[in-house]
Length: 68
Image 1 (cartoon, rainbow, N blue to C red):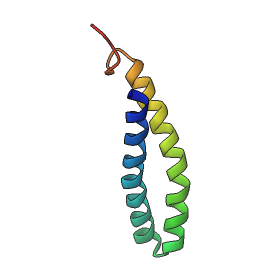
Image 2: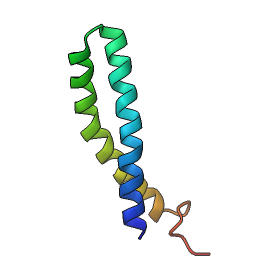
Image 3: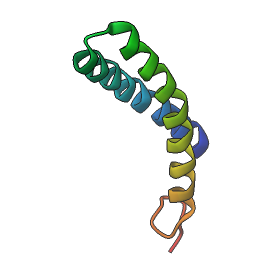
Image 4: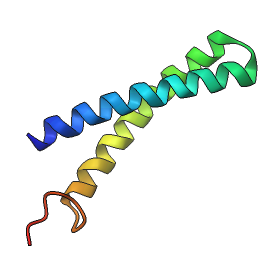
C-alpha cells in the first residue's frame, strides 16, 4: 500500500508542479509553446526524482516505515 500511495502522491504533485512551470515559463518567455516544452521536460525528471526521494525518506529513520 505504501508504494501505491507514493506513486499517487508523486503523480498528483507533479500535475500541480508542471502546471506551475508551464504558466511561469509562458509568462517569462511570452511563448506558450516554450512553456509547454519546458513543462514537459520537467514533468518526467521531477516525477522520477520525487519518487526516489519519497522512497528514500520512507526508509529513513524519519519516514513512516520506521518502527519504534
